[in-house]
Amino acid sequence: MAMMRSRRADYSESTKQALVDSATDLFTKNGYAATSLDAIVKRARVTKGALYHHFSGKQALFEAAFNQVETRAMAQLSKAIDSAGSPWERALDGVQEYIRVCLDPAYQRLVIREAPVVMGIERWREAEEHFSFGIVRSVLERLIEAGEIGDVPVEVTARMMFASLSAGAQIIADASDPKKASAEVFTALIHMIEGIRRDR
Amino acid sequence: MAMMRSRRADYSESTKQALVDSATDLFTKNGYAATSLDAIVKRARVTKGALYHHFSGKQALFEAAFNQVETRAMAQLSKAIDSAGSPWERALDGVQEYIRVCLDPAYQRLVIREAPVVMGIERWREAEEHFSFGIVRSVLERLIEAGEIGDVPVEVTARMMFASLSAGAQIIADASDPKKASAEVFTALIHMIEGIRRDR
DNA sequence: CCTTAGGACATACCGCCGGTACGTACTCGT
DNA sequence: ACGAGTACGTACCGGCGGTATGTCCTAAGG
Image (cartoon, rainbow over all chains, first blue to last red; front, side, top):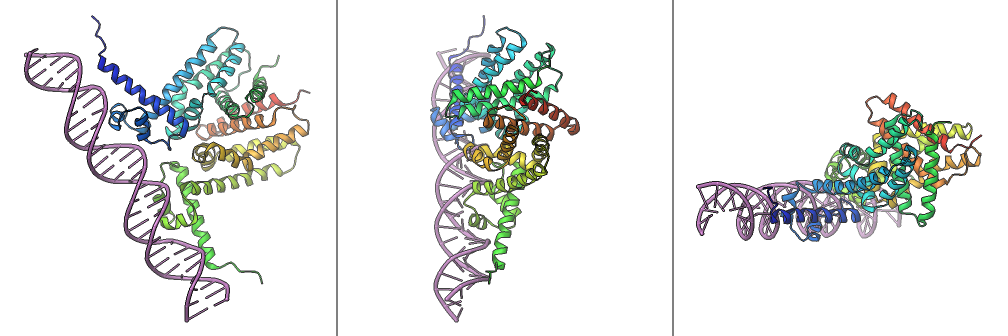
């Protein structure tokens, strides 16, 4: 008979999750440096003992929050892309959806802004490889395979597109007129993409 | 008779400069959070008393370092652009020179990566307006005035180009083969720029 | 059923670091 | 010459990340 998961293990997982959620909230609102562990555990209604039982420290807690935000973002993004269509349509859908992903304050703050300085740029790149950036690049690779665009240097183009996308999203995020900002960002992006599109 | 600058004032300015230089070095190497004030004043061969006499705190010291790095970068950049030529040539020169600016580790780390989280994104934008980003945008505006490119949304396009540029520079900065990376970044950039170039 | 080993926390405490308070020497104008 | 203000140095405080240790509870073994 399959080993049943104990009630106690459920509780444990629950408090761990509460810690991650609390950390995500506070890091998003006030940033990593300005958020104390005391504030995090208070919000999660536990003590530092619990925190250090589940995580090795503040950094590890941040990475857990980072991974959760990234995982959700990736799910949202790949769902939008997987819904068939030509490679070109998929790319445009992907752009649109990634902008939406970036509009999440948690994604903006944790993944884009804080992660490179908190985790270190090296670990950040490594992590992004498995998440959002990986998707962006794979979409770009599909476009090349399909002959939609010339053979640009994939890695470099993907990274710069990635940067443009998050920058665009940030513009939208703190624009006074989001509708107008979105429209402008999209036209700018389309222009850029047209630049790498194969002449026909 | 013109008031002569006292020797003591010279000393004062010198120690202030030493603090800024020390801070720039250490922040560049280890980042803001991992750099203690004790380490900074030790390297500058003064005490915290001197530091807090000249600056209101760690943040203010960071901003002083930021401003110095930015000022030098701006000088380097505008010198390259001012050397005549058509708006289009000036733009390409500017791109090339800005990449060079971004290759400075201090610029990369302080201005691009740390500043948004240390100073807060709002103050960072405000500062960039007077520095590098201001130049990028003015170059773009010249291109539009000269009719070289269609009327894209200036602010948005400039920001996204700015992001692409710094991303490209970062790729070059930590590439195993900088020559090759530079070439790839440039072709990618040219493609993007061609995308907004007016059809003719 | 009793024992016991270990997981899941809570509590108390330490050391570092940013910031403050205060003291002191030197200099500059009068 | 002398008060005043500048340019520091010294001593100390509080908060925060991290650690060490204790306690309770549960689940597995005899």
